[in-house]
Image (cartoon, helix red, strand yellow):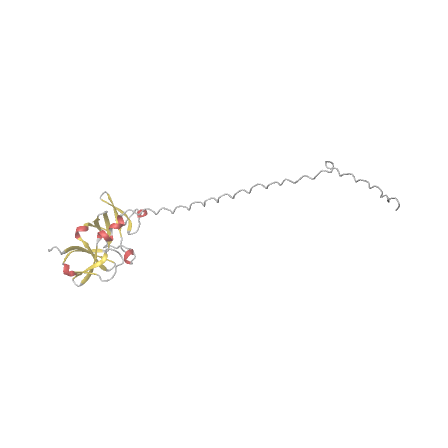
Length: 200
C-alpha cells in the first residue's frame, strides 16, 4: 500500500454508499435506540451506554434531506474525533476496502454539509461518498456557544439644564406729590383803586 492509498470502511445510508477512514473507526456495534434524548441537539439524537461510558449518537439523515429510521441491519459506527467518541447510525456496513489516489476525485459542485461528499471514490463501478469525520461530525460534540449578551440598555436622557431664573421686577420709586400744605399758595394782593390825577 502506497502513501496515497486509503483504507476505508464502507456503509450504506438511505440507498447511498458512504465511507470513512478506517483509522477513525474504533468498533462497529448493533443499533441501539438512543436514550437521554433531552440532551439531543443538532446531529446528536441522544446517548447510549457502551461498556460503562456514555456515547453520543449522531444521525446524518436530516442533514442529507432524509427521515431518520433504523432497521434490522442498522449499525452504529463508533468513531473517534478530536472532541471525543461518538456513534454514527448507518443502515448497514459493507466492509473494508483499499482505494488508490486514482480512484478518488473531488466533487466539482458545492456540498450541503461540510466534510460530507467533497470527495467520491469509484469502487467496482460504484460511486462512494467519502466522509471526513473530524469536519463533518466533530462539531457535534463541541459545547454550545454561549448566548450573545443582551444589548446594553440605552442610557437615560440627560436632564435638561435648568432655565435661568427671571430677575425680580424692579420697583420704581414714584415721586411724592408735593403737599399743598408744605407749599401754601401766596395770598393774592388786593389791587388798590386807580386814582385819577388832579385836574383830570
